[in-house]
Length: 208
Image (cartoon, rainbow, N blue to C red; front, top):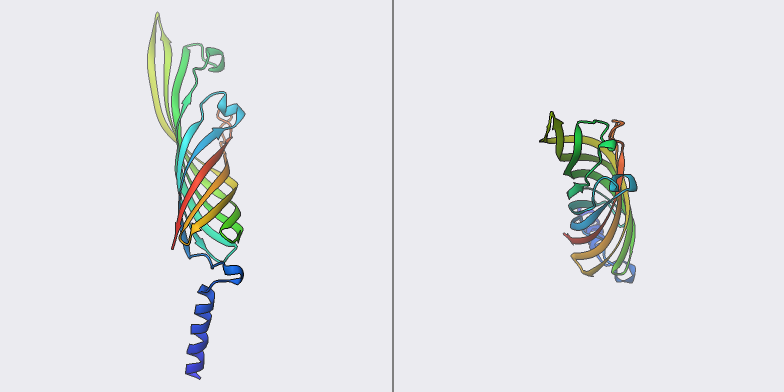
């Protein structure tokens, strides 16, 4: 009986790692990706700041051929604030304000998709933790002089993200693809409303 059980277990293990119908192989257990891309702000935010390059790293555990869970983390580089007129600042002593901000993100995600030969497509989404670092430089009117004032601060928010992607696997452990991710960052402050951005990126992956 023990010999039969051992033989059954060995047969099951070999079959799950063997090529599937049509020559496709089961996905490797873990996939690590690097994602250089570009962060495109929504219309309201883009009126105040510029777009920026971004860079992310992700790791996914493949539960089966169609479902994977993991997390992505990274940052958009510096979004430069455009010079704002005093009428937008609601403070007559502020003559102008410039600066930049950078967004760091950590997003646990679920990815679902399917493969056809060396090609694959997928959808993904999940919650997110977003940290925004602001570096502002204002010109403040003080008597007959205008003085510079710098404000460096960090704020943390929650949000969510969703996206789609396509890719190819030119070699067994290597994958290349394109992603388009939508991020929404929740803000509770009326003076700083929630904002969104799109992040198209190139995905370079290795699996094992």
